[in-house]
Length: 126
Image 1 (cartoon, rainbow, N blue to C red):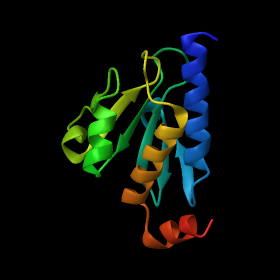
Image 2: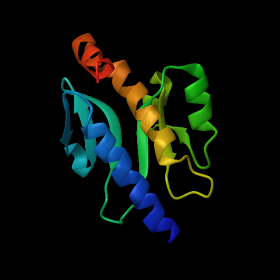
Image 3: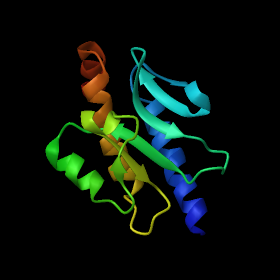
């Protein structure tokens, strides 16, 4: 399997996971896919048209998870000043990029940072 196809598979798994969280919805502001809960973005999924390498951008408040994400190959604080608030952009095509399961854990953490308590409670009862 090519690196690009493997990265796209990871991206699809992360997108499916994010949209399966309670109250999650996909929107396309700025022409890119985002997952929102309660009207707020919890993960930027980017575009899947092949114009840009696949990546995800998520908010990680836990210091260990944040440091781990930033240590991923090619990862960087998110642009537009979001990095100062804990947002990290993680490329998926880089050699040694995080596995889909780890990315889903980070998506869940980002979701828990943004979601209202009632939806987090719903997630915990699943």
